[in-house]
Amino acid sequence: MKKPFLLTLTVLLALSCQLPQLGMSSEDASATEAAETQAAIPTATKTPTTVPTETATPTIQPSPTNTRTPAPTPDLRTIIDDPIDLALIKADLPADGKYFLPGPEWSSPVTNAELIRGWGDDGGQEYVDDTGRVNGHYVTMYRGTDRLEIPRIVRVYMQKFNDVDGAILAFDEYTIGTDEDEYLDVTLDLPVDQKVLRWRETQSGGDILTVLSVEFLYRNYVVHVMVLGFEDEVSYDYLEIVAAEMLFKLESATLSN
Image (cartoon, rainbow, N blue to C red; front, side, top):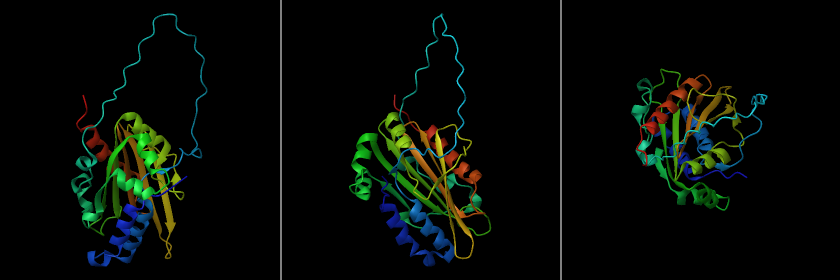
């Protein structure tokens, strides 16, 4: 059962009305309106089964009679830093894109109370309780040049959980994707568990508005990175660049003892 989170959608809708004041074109307005439908906090849905996966035929090996080598102890340390401390900033993006924050509303914390209120009666409290969600934060950057074919909008939404198990549960059982998203059998060059999604919509003039996104898991964090633009402006390479920057921040964050 799915229930999109409405807070960020409302914020982006209000901002889309201000686009002419920001010097943005009608095409840019369409891109921002599309972002409204993509800016959702996790909706309760199981991991899709439609993505083809390869499974190797297991080879039966005789059990060794000697002493087994102990498995390494998993590193369950958690990140202490809050999402706002690790949030996307302009310096994280390629300088030639001249990305900027159109207004303060394009960067905001998402508390548990806001998430629960946004979900209404559709499982928000259960999600928070089951996963041990602490808080979240999103940032939406807008492209500042028309000279390059790169994403018009870059958005990063980070969620922090009490422990690694809670983050795994959130990653496995929930997704930011909508019913219109397509799960892709694509893996970015990131050493983490990830889901890659795509959303496309043909505009009246024939151009195809496209959203590529990746959701990945690292320690007690789940991160969703989205790039939006017309088909020739978005790429997996650019998505990977942004996701790698966010992963680097997490890898450099302060850990619990």
